[in-house]
Length: 227
Length: 160
Image 1 (cartoon, rainbow over the protein chains, first blue to last red):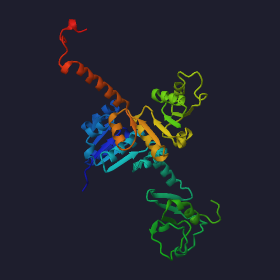
Image 2: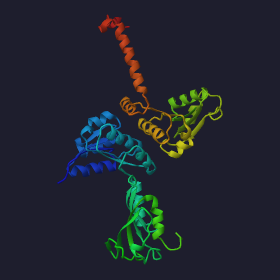
Image 3: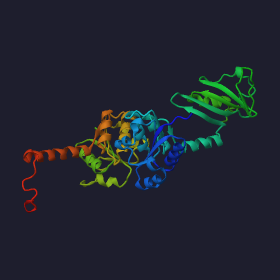
Image 4: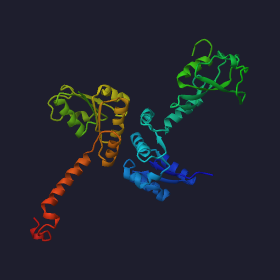
């Protein structure tokens, strides 16, 4: 059974429009808000009453859209200040439980953090992440990042001359704050036991504190510190 | 005192000059290099020669704020032409750079009022204009004994 939500989306650009369409198709109630008259008229031809014209950083526009009963506010305008303000107001003034903000310039991500606006979505960061996944640096891929909780899960391929290759898992002395959780070998994964012997080419999954990431990559990295 | 003004438009630039004349150290940050000229209106010397600082950059860039001296600012004025920009950068100045006095110019009275209630000091020129106009109208009402129709108001011949 799907939960039907009332979702306000601010910004009817490509992201906002497509998002609204998809969410409506899934049976949610959606109001899209757009402050460019021309854009509003274009999108209104398809979405009809599901789009309103106005500047959503004006509080009355949000109120007219029914923000007090919104389950979620998504700010995806092309302006980071607007997205920050709208989400901050939604969360702190109207006590909307879930917000999602789009970050246009990844350098502004720290400002969203500072104002407690999360989660955020940044297309630039997503593509950078994909590049990292496709072209891993030292075979390292971030699978999950929880910076608030100071936790991350990484995947790393052991190089042929890995210092850890040939060692029993029970004999490893991994850096403090790291834990080996899985080994992927020959297209199958398993949870390593103390007597599992690591092989070059193994992909390991580890959960760790981000601050010791370099220690961990060095530990499993090539022998003879030539990284 | 070191005053950092972000947004050197009509308000920001005039305030900057006045503060400089009062003997304070003043730094302006604006994304438009042309706004430097506005700082020099009524001055007979370049802005830098009278002791002013000017940095070109966007207010959300930490490098620009740092170059403009946010880390040693005693007062931070957010007076760009964007309400949301002013509200956001004022919070940065306050929370991240711990500037002791932070003031944001916000034209929208409702946004100004709410952020003020959240502890962010805002100045709302629109609110000031509304209050002044209101007082003028009320004073006019007072003068026209009890607020009744103006004597002869319907008679066009007597209207002026």
